[in-house]
Image (cartoon, rainbow, N blue to C red; front, side, top):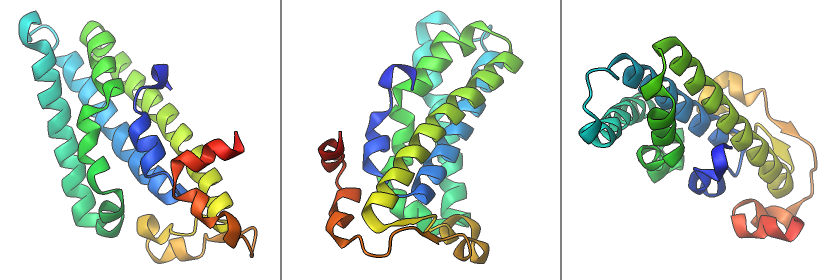
Length: 179
């Protein structure tokens, strides 16, 4: 996970798979869009102002994601809360724009953004699955937030009685108990 950049949302909102997928997709979109845009305009951006320009571009794409989530996935948007706008401050996104996209073609930059976003999403999903399984004994329990009525059929109950571990899924520090 790119030198452990972006741990804040990883620990804060990945208490189930649905939240992890939602935040992962949002981050992946921002990575691909910002990398592609930075790469296309890399020869037109002066070195002295490139970082503020990159932050503005990233913020623009985060705003697009935020508005789309408010329109189409409002309940998920409410759950993710402040962590959608905080994608702007994710150092991994700015780092990829600066280190890779500003020096490569738009195709390579888009692919880099996609791969970095998918890698970040996979880490989010694995942790979200572990926390959901440990905390409630289910997988895909809130998938209706992403898929509507189809999501209700995806819920899988693995362990029926798991009340003793419920609190551990919502407090990231308690995952250290298992380490």
